[in-house]
Amino acid sequence: MQHAEQLNVARRLLNLIDTQGTDRSEAPYLQPVSEYIDLGVAAREQEVFFRRQPLCLGLSNDLPDTGTYRVHDLAGVPILLVRDLEGRFRAFLNVCRHRGARLAEACGAARGFTCPYHAWVFSLDGSLVNRPDEASFAALAREDFGLTRLAAEEQHGMLWVCPTPGQSMDIAAWLGNLGPELGSYGLGTFSHYASREITRRMNWKLVIDTFLESYHFCVLHRDSICSTFFQNLGLFDAYGQHFRLVSPRKSITTATAPAADDSWSVLPHTVIIYILFPNTVVVWQGEQIELWQIFPGSSPDEAVMRLSLYSPTPALTEKARRHWDRNLEVVLNVVQNEDFPLGEGIQQGFHSAAQSHTVFGRNEPALAHYHREMTRALAG
Image (cartoon, rainbow, N blue to C red; front, side):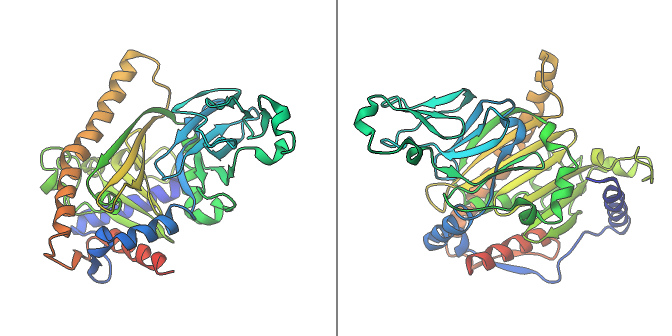
């Protein structure tokens, strides 16, 4: 976050603390329960949000060197992320153009990809460079059978892909005014420490909902994070469909007063959450970056997600690894043992016909904004 914006955020937070307030929307918002459970809505979401739009599939250091690759399947299509020998980020469908076999698994480094079925070979730029028994395929030009390319951009240290072939992207336009702020964190310099894939019995939007208010901090998280953060107090700022939430740590009240010089930072005294529409959550917390990629599962009642933790420098010592293991454990403990079990109960309740709508109060403006934009996008 740029320093001038840090000062603005600090002043706004201190004012809310003094007045015991929080950012509020103009009115409560009623969100239809059907959008969490309806099969037709789920199918429409797949088409609108997870086939046509840019998706953030990682940070730059997920592909740290030339020749590194990573497989990504959570979007519902097999995607192969590659950093070619010139250092350029590319994305392809992870499908051999001969008989459709998967070319790669997990992650690693390679100078090309050899199909495990019939040994067709593809370069890191997707070109078909060898096929055994070439004479049997001579009537079919090699250049017509390279890997299927996907639109891919590396911007602000983030890896963006559109999962449908033939689509185009403009990430600068997609992020708008939020782009420079994301760029100010230097996300491309952070090192990937660890990732965890999680599946829970709740709608994917309900997972995102857990990040969007601090109203529950000292109720659900009474014994974990309540002592660290203010309850029901935070900032909300929209950037088109994307938005930012800032929750202050109690340490902000004892920190040195916000200063105009660059030596003062609000970052140690806040948790900052960015929602990159529709399904990516970026969390700045302390010295780490958390990237949540949240996708629909096999039904409206299932979400699949990947949590990735990034450190400002590589964890090269046992002491450093113990530190980052503890940080990851803290994050997982809160969501896995507190947020998600409650969310699964909510998902069950949505099928009971107890209510046609769930209620977002004026003190929950991010929830209202997110679901209003979601509903508008689905309506075209």
